[in-house]
Length: 466
Image (cartoon, rainbow, N blue to C red; front, side):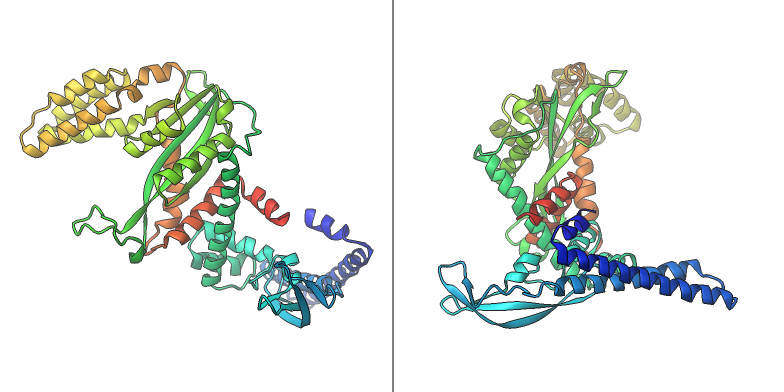
């Protein structure tokens, strides 16, 4: 593995250590084998499940011994001499060696590290912690990686339980929460650095040009703790907000249609970006992701969304010239809602809706508007809804020429980003009893975006070389 190659490449002393500990693994395996053979000879037989779990536990313990000896083999233990630069123009003086108990994916290990203190800065330094990536934490990078992975996928308590059963990693749910959110914040900082480089023109996409690049966006509410909703209005009867909107954008490509002329999304081409933030910040976020994915080289750029004004204001600012398409299914929902409100029988509703949807699919939006305006208004509320619905179709008229979009082999639905909202945000952040801070929610959203975009390995690689 890559980890083994790095260890073997560290020099002859560590190579000898690897060989010695490998022999210890073999001796441990031989001892276990002898014990099991004696058990079988006594007529006890082999309980396969118990045997494999016992072997795994033993191997983890032996691996912990291996790791402990590997760390102890560095006899300097971070000692860099009596004085070292503190990083702020002064010198820090060696004080003593300090120990730390470190939870790893194998077993706990004890570290001894040289501690330095800078009197002018009133600040301590432990160089070895920086080298091992354990500054301010008692969890190894490998343990933090596992904790972040489960924390991004399920509740922190469920993650704690899975780590105990699947990895024999004894951590509490609060530790899973802290590590997951810290990793999410770090991943977001890594991606934000990339976004800023793109925004300022210092970084451009290296991805080959694609025929059709799609950009889609949507929003979904995330349940918040009370202090995060102060000053925000909600849709409930009390007028108080209980959620904050997380905006999610996705980018994907299309290079072909199927044999019936229907668009086919390129496999593994969908990437995500999102956060609970204002439209301006989100616009920069989504624009940078689109540039990274080849916006400037795409033959055709298509933007998909519902009728929310913020979406199309953002498109006008960042994606002028793109083909703009209002999600067909949202448009149909507007027709279904107004039919239910104004027509008294199911038969009349279905007949009117079928004809209106036919006109809509054909791109005859002007006739759809006439059909809406011709509906009976039996109350002031009905008249107001008819006016709003007609206005919705009037405003988005050119974004609803579905016959033309289909003739170009384009998608006319925003199902990809809607599915992303459900999979990426709702399934993780909207479970029963969950209430988030903005910072906590954004950290998990960043972590999930990174993972579902297939970029988590890139982040870990960049982190290891940081």
